[in-house]
Amino acid sequence: MSSSDIFTGETIGTAVLILLGGGVCAAVTLKRSKAQNAGWLAITFGWGFAVLAGAYIGTKSGAHLNPAVTIGLALDGAVDWGDVPLYIGSQLLGAMIGATLVWLAYYGQFRAHLTDPEIVASLNPHEGMVDQTAEPQAGPVLGIFSTGPEVRNAVQNLVTEIIATAALVLFILTMGLTKGLATSGTGTLMVAFVVVGIGLSLGGPTGYAINPARDLGPRIVHALLPLPNKGGSDWGYAWVPVVGPIIGAALAAGIHKIAF
Image (tube, rainbow, N blue to C red):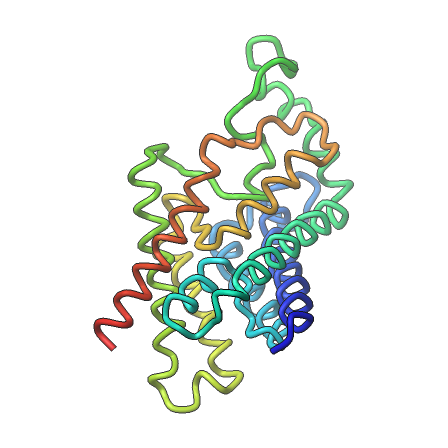
């Protein structure tokens, strides 16, 4: 496949993935959204459908949409290492585009949420106003853009991301063992189901990034967007959803080579 195929498929596919995935997080989080407080089931199924849509759109490039998947496939010998930088760069660009589109789609809701007196007061409960000199670990809408732990423990959070990503990448690598699954549209559907399952089973501790571009690209956008009272982008945690999935992908590739 050509460099143009990789760039186009990965950029557009990842943009749609983040648009729909970040969109469901915005829908559940933001005030004045009809889906506010819809809950974790809505988020997990929303992300599953986001993967499904992005992967079908990105078929031309192989629909990795995830640096961890690309690295896992490269370690397994299914992707040329020379193509890996283009894959990852395209995925990161697509993730940033998708996050920006979420902001545009929910522009009014972002403003209503971030200027709500209750939200503003929560940022600085002692004075009822935002402390412009402070850098909170995570702002009130950061969860729309990127992930964060419920219990902040770097080792546990890293292990969670490793395990969840290893499960995803191992499934993708072993799809070829089922005749016809890897070459049919059914394979993409199965991956989407697995993403839902990972969210339901392993998403509770960290929000299941399982994709470095999915977390880093939107986190950069959160830091750059002119959102009032947006708070911090939690850069101290940002390495976990990047490093964890890469280690998980490498682990999955090793297991695949040894066991299958």
